[in-house]
Image (cartoon, rainbow, N blue to C red; front, side):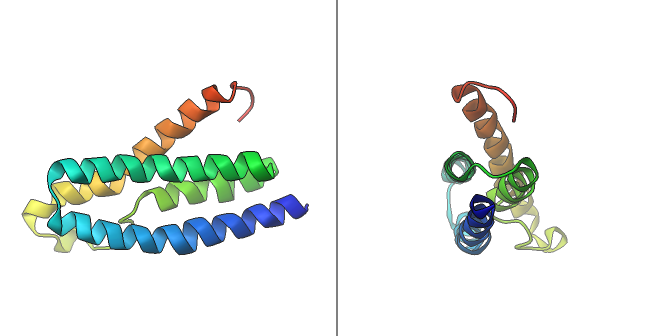
Amino acid sequence: MAHNVAFLFSTIVILLLLARRLGWRVSKRMLYFSADGALIIVGVLWGAGIALVVDALIHWLDPYSLVKWIFGYGLGAYASSPSFGLMNEATLPPGLAARYGVMTYGPVLVYVATLVVLHFVHGGGPI
């Protein structure tokens, strides 16, 4: 039971408090002031980094399945979108709408793909 409490505390502090705040700062900077290639690279690194953190916490603290799915994979998916809830899409200038979409959904796709790869690297088995 203690490992579940430690997992909950770790994911809330790391993913909700630290990653979300850093993600908003990074995404604001990337949306307005970066080249398209840099936006994609940062998105890939962000999604893969969040997946590595979630995977490491799951393998280190070994939480129960429900806790793992909700506070591990679910909270990781939320944190992997660095610009989630940052802006109202209807208020974006026309030139930034595509960049905002890449910044919002690209890292989530990388997050899921990285977790799938890590699952097979760890030998498969039940998720």
